Length: 301
Image (cartoon, rainbow, N blue to C red):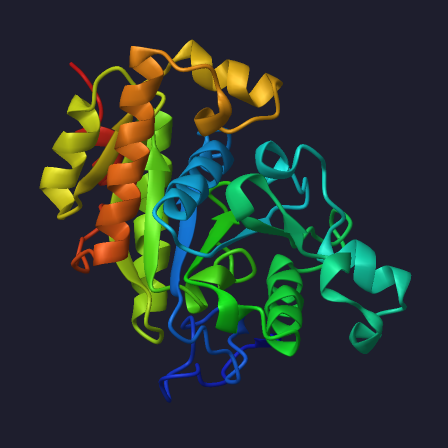
């Protein structure tokens, strides 16, 4: 299981994981096997869960076995896939007084649209615990039930832009960190902080920056300008369409909505993104800006 550590070594380095800070250390027994693991981050409300769920379906349309793990106490990452708010790992562990050996796979893994397997990690009550512990317990259960051995793609959909040790812990399990952003000040400012978090984890773990998904934006000029200045790359662009809003209200993925030329273009973009990520993206050695520098960079006279 994950543990809190001030000066204990990370799984792949003798250096502390997070100099001068409390970090959540990776269980050395974690092994995703042949699965490709992605951790999706971005500003709160930017559409990470919508993006993650539709990307999961796109991978499944390519014939991949997909597992999506929601890492948010609201446990709403997978509802468009399952049409419900699924019980969380913490809910089911509490029901058996945290005796994990009493749980069955169907107690915490739920099949969603087109065969995507869904898990909601949940979280501790507000102000009472660490999100990293919850992620650790989730990964431990997946390993105990040998679910990762039967999976091609794992997507961690992570709470907001919180980059503390707890909610940064999915980066310890991921191959690529993916950032979702809009073409505005707040989203790009948050993205810059997330770049810093991913680069910090990359010092001790296998995770590397994979790129940026532009979401809910007609244009991408500010995103592209930031990317050019820091060394990031845009992987995909999804405009702000009403069909996306309606899909959430219908508790459905975009691949289940009535077809229109506009929607077909978005579906094609998701399929191309999935194919690109499956083929493998080059790791990006981006250099984030200092907060004051990005404040000036994004400002206008």
